[in-house]
Image (cartoon, rainbow, N blue to C red):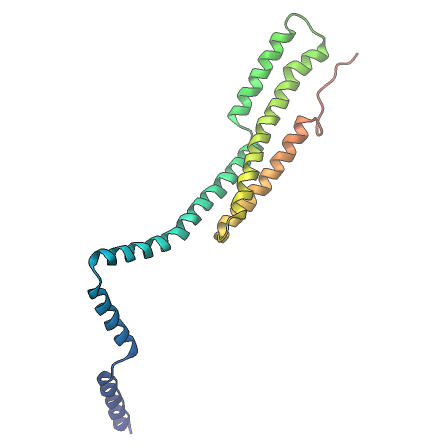
Length: 182
C-alpha cells in the first residue's frame, strides 16, 4: 500500500512539473516585461516604490521625536529650568536695587521675593504651554504608532499639570507671599 501511495505522489509531481504554475508564469512575464523596459525607467520605478515605503516611517520618526520633546518640555516645566532660575535671580536683584534706598517691609517682600516667584512661574508656564501645544499637534497627526500616541498623551497630561501649577503659583492660589506683622 505504501508503494502505491509513493507512485501516485511521484506521478503527481511529474504532472505538476510538466504543467506551468500560475505563479511561475507570472514571474516569467514580469521578468520579460522588465527586460523590455529601459534600465532608467526601471530605476525610477524602484525609487518610487522605495519612497512610498520610506514616507510612513519618516512620519513616524518625526511624530515620535515631537512626542518625546513634548514629554521632556513638560518634565522641565514641572521641575524648573535654568532659564527660570536666571530670570528669578534677575528679578531679585532688581527688587534689591529698587528697595535699597528705602522701602516698607511689604514692598521689599513683594519686590525681592514676589516678583522672582512670579517670574519663575511664568517661565515654567511657558515651557508647560509649549509641551501642551506640541503634544496636541502630535495627537492630531494621522497614522501614528501607538507608542508615539502614548508618549504624546503623557506630554499633554504633564504639560497641562505644569500649566495649572504655574498659573496657580503666578496668581498666588496655592501659597501667598508672607506679610509683615504690623
